[in-house]
Image (cartoon, rainbow, N blue to C red; front, side):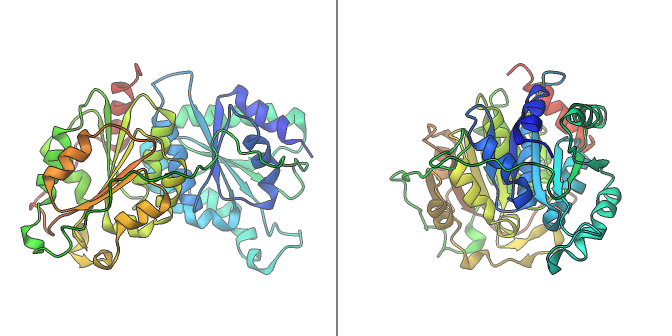
Length: 396
């Protein structure tokens, strides 16, 4: 058994300062320790996949080469299933490395609750199937450094995750002092006087702007020298690429719904940049918990723009339930600094040019369904697009 400080301090020496996850009793000592160190950051996530996407955003904020910002996603193995999509189509595809600490509930031969009876035996096979190398979490302080060195060597060589599987009783208890919040603590906000505008709700959907018109507005108001634009999976990224392929843009593939936690991680890691997350209604509905996380932790350099056409456009136009959902009210209730709903491109232009507030800004733009035929796909591979973006902002 080790103490929390043994691992966290060894991790700090290797650049690990960011932690995100969903708690497990095995992880409590780490969480308590990190929360009480003002130079470290722990973010409590709505689900394990969001934690993986956020730490991927931290990695995206690195300049090429050392020193590197590093992050750790922590989860119970029962939540590993929630993280499969970003682990296989975000971190693997874009080569955004991170360390995973996965607790081994239901380990064969160790008595546990019935819900872990299947996940326990298959946890190693799941990691193997996802091509994530793993080893048992070190239980002796002298073994921590070598384990961390193996993990960082793999991460630096491949750009992909490495996992430590934590057995029961690996870490001694560490108390959380009353009132301790930590540098990454969630905070309540008073929303600005900018109220949700529902002007687009009653209009004719065909009179709304197209996605292409909206994206042209985005390009016009996001200078490539200072703003990162992260486009959601599907036609959003492809159409943005078709209009103008700029080095400050990244086009998500897979990991539907993960663009917002990815943007949050990047915005936190790189306060010198403005980060715009281009979301879609289907993606937002899939991961509504991200709204709460952004509202709690989101910095003033994070803009969240949801382009809502009421359908899954890239898969044939199947309807979503967004017409019955007020994303603006959700964002406001979750603690965004401002929230706007509109179908007016002029309001979006003003929103994009507005001065930062004390927290993230949200806007939902109602657009009409449909897209151009034969949209091109980016000619560069996803990891090449990522590398271009990192090099573009490397001097930051």
